[in-house]
Image (cartoon, rainbow, N blue to C red; front, side, top):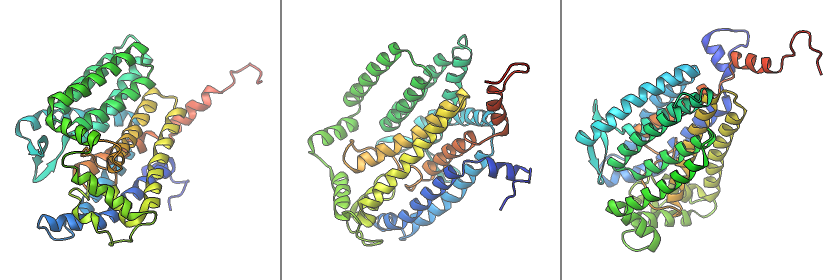
Length: 384
């Protein structure tokens, strides 16, 4: 146990970190590792690998992911901003490179091989993009003569264009929703709300007519016709699980779900552990988002407020998309469940998000002193 009397970096970190956030992140990762035993062996055997191939890789990815999360949690807000700028520059450069030399999977060019590992640069772009836009919005709020909002709009246009070029409509929608939420919190004029709403509707309509796979998924969702095997089996797994599930290792439908260990791990959880377990999982994500928004509401620093709110919104909306697809409430879209699904890039990137949240929500002495100064009675003035 670290003593309060100690004044080293580790002691300062321990007594200033939001330990509830830290426990939640690690707990959700533990649930994800547990579910990998249920979801991944059938997938591994189906493609000719040994049963626990993905379980071992999941464990291997967890170690650097937790290290990244803890390492980033030591940063100051200024260091978070500088780190995010560096990550954003590198990830955007890699997203451009992916369009030319990237690995094509299922019609999308989103991955690139680095040192023998398949990396998805857009995953690392997301948390960095949120932090940098939060800084731009905050600078405009602090000094209106600085065109921070304009720069944020230009940056959003660049990122959205690269995502559409891959193409990755799901990540585009997620990024747009989070960016729009932050812009709204920063005091978006009503004219911009109307224009962005029209632009978003126009973008979705254009995607329907330009990208055949998008049109196919929307048509399947609206009509229920065509190849709906993945969605149908996911629904069957949830129904079979009923309230309390079939028990660990007793799932049958999970064995034929193509992406059971990634996009449809929620359905596997429902079949083996039941709807009650899934409701508890949804409640955990809800508490995570609400706690982050509560932090943002109390925060007096604009940058911290926008960044924390944007980061938890990113995790929350991504969770909604993944769970909505599993429940057949949204068209099929390949998006992982944060901290739960298997995936190297997605796991490390979501831990970057978690590390930024931990760093920005720490209870720093300088922040407490600032808060006290706001209520200090000037010398010579009687206290009320």
